[in-house]
Image (cartoon, rainbow, N blue to C red; front, side, top):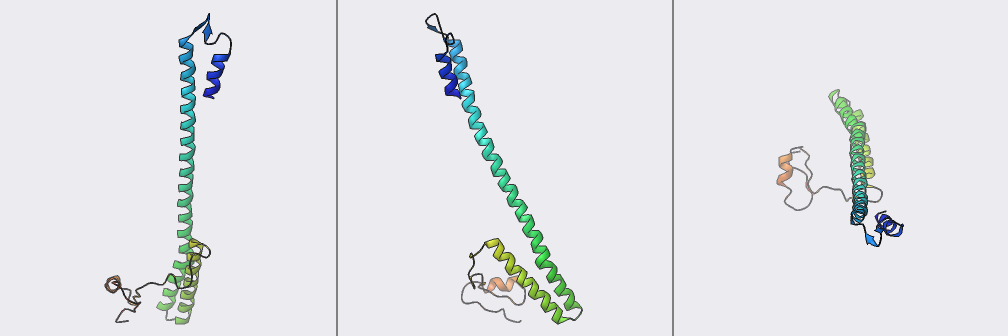
Length: 152
């Protein structure tokens, strides 16, 4: 656009040349308009890029929210159900709820990581803590083979 303005200013009769002399005021105006056109183009490109980055961030936040809701629906509710069954003394139903929660967790992890992203055994932890004590899990994490925590 700015190149077109400059070319037209020189080509059109009586625009920049009048009586064989250059009209510097008109030339300055044409160059100013050309510069503004370039600046507007650069600004618009930056604006479009910023808008697309913002839209991508919003999509990511929405995906995280959907994943959290799915986790709540699929896993946490089954775990709560298992805990309730255990409290009532119904171990078979509790185990069934735990199996459902484990299956849902596997499905969620597979969905989040994508197809073929995880091979069997790849997500095995190096430290197993059967007591649920975070301090004891950290003590045995210095290396070595996977072990079960003592006292379980």
